[in-house]
Length: 149
Length: 146
Image (cartoon, rainbow over all chains, first blue to last red; front, top):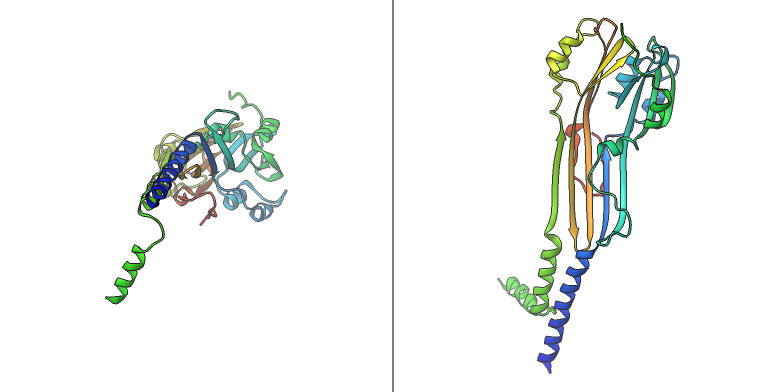
């Protein structure tokens, strides 16, 4: 009787192992997080006054920008941003839903980077700041490089 | 000595049967065997000593390129220009526990911009050096910036 119970226990345990392995092969829960760089601290950004701060002040306060581009009337824009993504999900081996990859694709991420853009006039004085998706802010303001004689 | 015997006796009299213990250990081994770490980087790290001697108003774009090598990006700003140098360091850590996978990826950059005037003389330098602070972490851990 005792042996029979022990054997039943053993079979149950083995079944548990097999079930766990099988489940692990087709169903996965994942919690992934990706970060690229750090967002500019608001306090530092607000320390730069429009009409007063210069390009030199901005670079000294905020460091190197992510992007730089040309504006009309010989102005320039510098952009600061960071990217992060957190994902909690269920992954089934049968692709029922689109699954984001934990691998970082910089070009894909670059399109989603949010941050701040600082606009400077020809003299290098801060004229305005903007916050949002850097790709959109750039597309709205960038001037095509001018021809140089 | 007596204390050791007592501990050994209590271990033998543990309520988990031997076969069950084997199964549990096997499960633990399977569950914990899939830890991984990965590291990747873009470009060589930027050395501060290479650009700290540059003098705004004196150093030319040619001298910057001679000292720093080819830039990652060149931006035309009307008749002025800017050069970007960067380096990124990424660390990925993760593990799978049975059916649950945890992955964390941290990427930080070193980036330096050099701005030049119409005569290709250096006017401004902006630098951010964060790549060395890249961390191995898990998704629930707080990210620090020292």
